[in-house]
Image 1 (cartoon, rainbow, N blue to C red):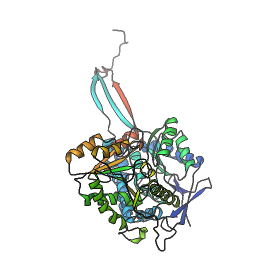
Image 2 (cartoon, helix red, strand yellow; image 1 turned 180 degrees about the horizontal axis):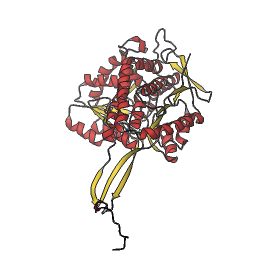
Image 3 (cartoon, helix red, strand yellow; image 1 turned 90 degrees about the vertical axis):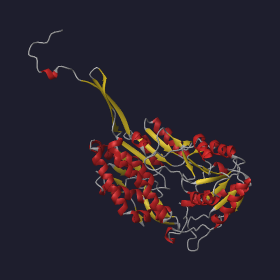
Image 4 (cartoon, rainbow, N blue to C red; image 1 turned 60 degrees about the vertical axis):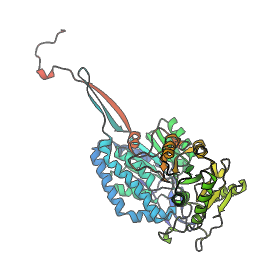
Length: 499
């Protein structure tokens, strides 16, 4: 069985805790590797090494820092297949989806090549008599990221690329469920020329998380995961004087107007609802057709498409639509929520509970489920399912549909499908959700915009990637300068007297 490691000061180390976690192959249910779980002493070692290395890295010309990322991007392209295979083997997502995971992180690295421009400050000549003022963006020192299992390549790169480009050292605590790709990324950064200690990967569970939150040497913490844990990390990190950004759960609504192209809407819902087995914070998990006629047409289109979805292991070929859930616990939780929906009276149009794959009976597969006639009081509507389950809530009119999305406690992403520009503009202007799609089902912004939700989907003032990332990972220093006059006139040899 493979034994993984931490990556500290440019070396693979086993740590001192003696504790380990099993890493499963979700398709077979077998333990395929083990990863060490750090204690506070392991974390302190990583932070101390990062702090030592950061001094010289922070003083390095931003253009030279960007060149390391440029080489890192080349290496990502070189090792794309290897990274995708490792990701799929531990997470379970299909190979094309795994490559997309890597590419969306790579795009943020590309944006960070502009660090020399993004780090420029401001300058005012002649702010007062003989006075100039200017500001500088300087690194915080050591930052940390706590990242989830569902995007083990993309989200770590969303965190460490801008932090490192801005001159910080970075402690990455990836999910202990699929840590191989984050470790591979750290070694690629080292191969690209990053000095030892600037990117440390410390694996662990809550003990490692608390060590990050309590360590005086860490100035900033970023997190992506569930809302309860996001709230915990935000509160504890802020209480310890850290800059903190946390991104939590989601319940993303897609409103389908009567004038929408139903084939286009149904295809969009299939991809956005069931891709990666629904284990995406930007998955569309609630369809909101406006009007009974619209709902009936949509269900007529959706049901056969959901029934035809191909489920299988990542080795099953590129035509596999989605794979297993990440753990047996995740499968049990999703199954429990589906049962609760049935018991609450929702209509289970497509029932995937009995799905089993020959030769993979012990895998964590769960069949696609489609609900209709769901009401806002049901658990399958209020809770984030994080599985291959799409629920349909019928709305009488546009205002009722808008209210559903606005009243939900989560505000990560949303979408509207319509041919009506006025409805689309009104929706974009009024909706209290951070990322909005118009005839786009998963409105994840490109790397040069920022990613972040509203309401209980986000804690903190700044978003991920884009310009906000450089604001988050730097602090501003403002300098007011006045130079005394007369030096240019040469030296005075007589004793100075008051004039």
